[in-house]
Length: 168
Image 1 (cartoon, one colour):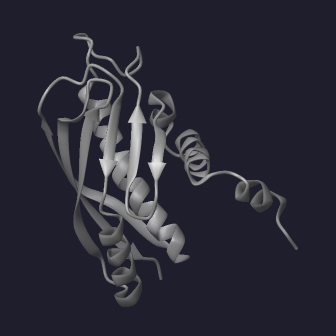
Image 2 (cartoon, rainbow, N blue to C red):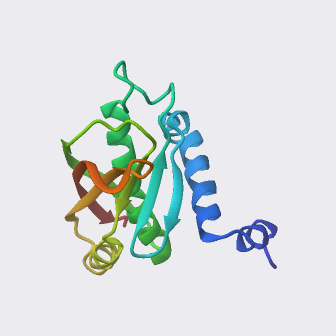
């Protein structure tokens, strides 16, 4: 029998489905995400762009994005790519970020886009974890730009070590 929820989801675009998932996950599992309001701007199996608006919730005393919010944006972009690959695998896999490195290049004085473009590598890591049952790790790069100022000028770069393991 057709699940009515699946029929409704099937009518939504990939971006709308991703945003519905992100909002639901934020509200139920990580309320701070719901507070800062990330939004998926584009998504496919290779890449994701997550935007966090600059507003009273995300701004520091200098009028730029607070570095904790920048960290949350990088985490969201990298984790979304991993969660998508895990979901597509149909297997139960635990994920965690083992470490986090940030390089702040300039103040983010507008809405920030966080880009993660290693979906194929994350997908291969997921398949490796499924095949072996062992813990596997990789460095996930994420970049941040302020598209309203210069969509190519980086404001920050991040390296997150993704660690995944198949549940038994």
